[in-house]
Image 1 (cartoon, rainbow, N blue to C red):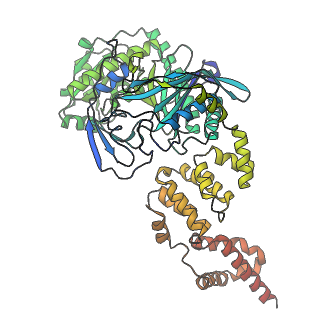
Image 2 (image 1 turned 30 degrees about the vertical axis):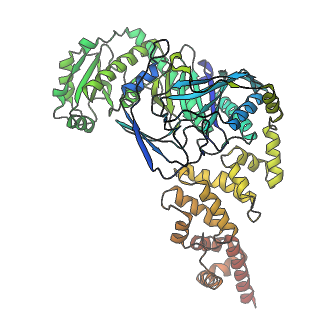
Image 3 (image 1 turned 60 degrees about the vertical axis):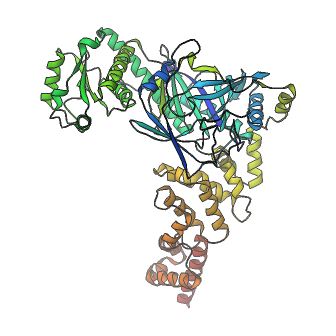
Length: 636
């Protein structure tokens, strides 16, 4: 298949931007919005689904309930209280969060309501202890100007952030309550047509507008985009958890390719005239056929008392593995679905024999299912009750494939792809919050909010450029980065160079991330302390990258640990002179041949041995004077 032509498939993208607010407190209590490292409290919950006021069940909540997971919560009294534990009613809405939401809404020319109602949004994946998220619609409409074009705003909401996921296994899901309840603003934009690069520019522009308020949190995870993607003739797919702009561009490209690939698969299935799967006839217990199977997945399942089932799909041979585009195939979509039920995976006839499943086992399955030559089948192992739920989901997903692109919720991966998360929620997930009175927005509050609309981000950028004497490119990089607040804090110490600080924050750390190192291990406190040590002369400039690299690759837990392991800045003048004198003696031939041009290769050798132990400028000056003195002595 040729490369996808995105401009020919009717791509539409709607962004939902979620920005944490920098109030320092949570939305419905007075707890600090800080990240804890110690969790003295823990408790478990089992969340169950409830019908809406109209007696309906939400499909996404029904799906989560089917996983039958226990939820474990970890809490610290410094960052959460009984409100987050759902043991106490919510307090009044944070006035600072309310004011910030009104300022942002005013900046986007939104029609703000004079009376705001708190709603409960049903969420039973465990990310909210109560089983719902509190949200309030602040206003509708508005616009954002991007490269001279107007992008419509659908709505602006003020809501509480969810708990932070620590771990998710087949039976247990673990969260911390640090993040739960932090106020955030959700800005939903009108769907637009355009390339992934143009959508990225829209997200960048709204992010810059939010940062210009100086009322929002900075750092990884403080701003997230949910992306609603559709192509012509397909359902809307919501992709959650996009945290970086480069990831956003890749996600849109992947979703466009995935959805168009599913459309091609749909057209092919329609031509084949695939019959509907009859659960009573086409789903069989095939455990007996796999008693001696070498597949590790099946062996593990059988050891835990599971059974193996097979699903026959008539006339489906070749369709599970058919790839309209590389990596886009129905078999992969089904595998994602199965894994979200906590099963190891699913095997399909187009990839067998393989993965420890032998030809004789395949033939036994075909015999039990009574397949014809052009029939396909799926094999999966698990607990009997769970397999019934999974089987129904698989049959529905294959039926959906015949009619096009199903509307569903997916989650973004770090690589920029997406995987299945749950069905799209319905209208029955929202209902009024009974514990909080309506919130009145007075004319005075709206007038004050308009007065506090920030300068344009371009003006803010020029201010940073002038204040810290940065070139335009570096100023833009630090403004767009997650480190602006930290940069300004570090640069209050006049002993450090703003240019050096910004190049480290925007260049060095990014390069280390590209090498696969984990920036989440590098805390803001580590970064600020490193520059403090630099200002005090306790480490050399070259030590900064070594320290960050050691922490980000997990080899060190603290700055002091790195300094001790690398013997940083422990060399006095006598020792340095001795090392450089020895270097010159060992390379006297090069100095005689090249004169001062030998400075380059000798400096390289010196830095190889002394990097991080002595400031590079100090080495450079001393080595240059020593080479010059040796040349002068030889010419006499």
